[in-house]
Structures are given as C-alpha cells and as structure tokens.
Length: 398
Ligand SMILES: Cc1cc2nc3c(=O)[nH]c(=O)nc-3n(C[C@H](O)[C@H](O)[C@H](O)COP(=O)(O)O)c2cc1C
Image 1: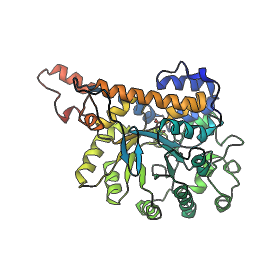
Image 2 (image 1 turned 180 degrees about the vertical axis):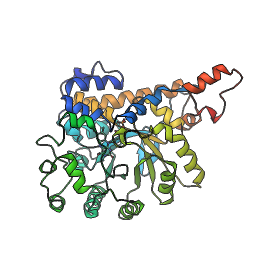
Image 3 (image 1 turned 30 degrees about the vertical axis):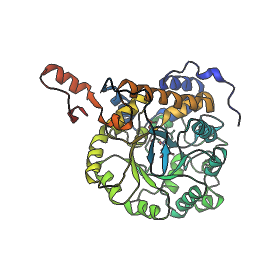
Image 4 (image 1 turned 90 degrees about the vertical axis):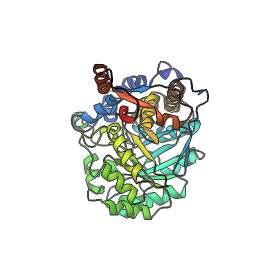
C-alpha cells in the first residue's frame, strides 16, 4: 500500500483537536456527524471530554526523569505505551484504505490496534498487511452464537492477541443526528467484511445494504437478551485473554473479575449508546478501589476509553488507577485527514504529550504516575476558601 502523497493536509495539526477540525472540512457532513455524534441529546459525549478539563495534575519535581519507562504488559500483549487503539467499525467510511491504513500506522508506531467485528477489511487481511503488528479482535454476542464463535476462532487462528467482547450494546443507541441526515445504511460498496457467506445465509441478507438499514440489521442479528452466561460461554470457547468492554458500574466490574475475565474496559462507547451515561473517568476511581480490594495476587487490568484527547488525559486516568487507555475518534480523524500519515501523526502526538507530561510531573515510570495527585476544580475552589485544608493524600483524587 502506498503512503498518501498529501503530506501537507496535517502539517498544521499540532494537537488532536486540530485533526477533528481538518476532518470536518474533508468529510461529507453526514459522515463527519456519524463519527462525532452520540446518542440521545449527547449529554454523555460532552461530559466525556469536559471532565478532563475539571482535573489538574499536581506535579512533582527534582526526580530525575530524563528517560521515562512507558511499557507494560496487558494480558499477553506488550504495550509500548499505556494506550491502544479502540475497536471501531467501518474505517473505510472516512478513508478508502480503511483498516489497512490504520493497521500499517499502528505497526509503524508500535501501538496495538483493536479490530471490530464491523470492520470494512476482513480480520485476516488486517493480519496479512501488518503481520508483525499487535491486534485485538472485538465482537458482539449475536443471536446466532455459531457466527460469534466462528469469528472468534478465525481471529484466534490468525494471531489476534486478545478478544474484546463489547457488552454495552444490547441494542444500538438512537442517534437523532443520523436520522436528521438521512444516514441509515452503509454507503454503496461498503460492507461489514467479516461475515462469511454462511453467516449471511443465517440472517438472510447478502450484505447489510440489502436489509432495511442499520436499525433492521441490528434487530435481525443483535441479541438484547445476553447475560453473564453468554459472555462466559464465549470465554470458554477461546484460549485468548478475554476483556469485557462497556463496564460502567462497580457491581459489573466485580462480576467480570469473579467470572474470571482477563480484564475490563470501562467504556460508554464514546457516548454512542446511553445518551446520559456517566463519563467513564468519573466511574474509574470507585471501580479501581473496589476491584483492587478483591484482588489477591492476580493481575486484573482495568482499561478505560471515551473522551481521551491528549497524552495528559492518559496520565490523569493512570493517576486514578487505570492500567491503560483506548483511543477512539481521534484515530478516525487522523485517518480521514491523511490515511497512514494522519494516524501516525495522531499516535506520535499522543506519545510526545504523554512523555512530556511524565517528565514535567516528575514521573520516570508508570508506577510514579499512579502516585501522582490530581485536584478537581471544585476541590481547588474549596481549598482556597479554607486555607487550612491541604491536598496531601488520596483525598485529592476526584
Ligand atoms: C464511528 C465509531 C464506530 C464505533 N464502532 C465500534 C465497534 O464496532 N465496536 C465497539 O466495541 N466500539 C465501537 N465504537 C466505540 C469505540 O470503541 C470507543 O469505545 C469510543 O470511540 C471511545 O470514545 P471516544 O471516541 O470519545 O474516544 C465506535 C465508535 C465510533 C466513534
């Protein structure tokens, strides 16, 4: 695959928000709005990013941090940085090279990539073009479990390192903006490429374009009745580490641990499911506290996504106890702006912001980040009123 020649498209993009501005110029309105929008009145989408603006890092100094260590192991995967690319469908909606371009960019940058069941490039093809890359496969549990198990088996056979089961989507959240834009089905020529002919026969569709559109497709194949039994059933059929994506409550986090999953991804699907779901960063500290209390020796990674827009956002989540972060929409903006180069640039900026943030907060390891104190705007105002209150100790953590 050739790298896009349009190198200038992102030359003015210095922070992740710049890519969104450029993507907005490049993409048709209905596609741009499909990517950025959320469910309902989008309370959750707004809150997901705003919460980061209400939190400040209290930096440490004089701690010799010229070469911070950023790598860690999550499940069987070695991450060079504590972030990976979240799984999302239909990369080809924003760029003709779709998931192949994203995979090559991630390979170059040494970043793990989540590939969705709804990818517009087959899961085997992704592994073929970026064979040395690190990939996780994400699926939903469908009405016909045979299709789900076949997808999982295929992912296992071609070298995916983990399985992510998304559990926040018994149905798909209603996004009025897509209705307003008349965007109800994939554009001609684009398909969810991961289904085999046999799968399509079961639901009697040649491709999702032949159904009544997104809603009809979801009605036909998604199962709103899934329970813990079903996710455990899929877990029993794979040797891959299995992460549950879409956990938002302490109770569900503890159940995921109890049932032996490899870890969780705290996620509200970027605000695309429940319109007024709680921002994930807000649930993080209580989930971390409850889960860590249960742990004995075992490792139970807690990942998080939704609303992360800078390397310093990642630092804040780690300071609140997350192990790693999944990056969502900014990857699609980079891809829309300039294919492989755009995604590489987004990842490069995140790395730089993360490393600079570590050095400027006096952290030479991920462990140091966990010891960092954060203070919220509200607490800051309270502390100013009451000069005797101090910010030492975990009290300052949200
Ligand atoms: C266009 C789009 C498609 C998505 N498709 C999927 C998907 O197929 N499977 C999934 O588990 N999550 C999907 N997600 C959710 C992402 O994995 C992730 O949770 C979300 O983007 C994080 O929020 P952020 O974009 O604010 O960072 C999608 C998100 C977007 C924006």
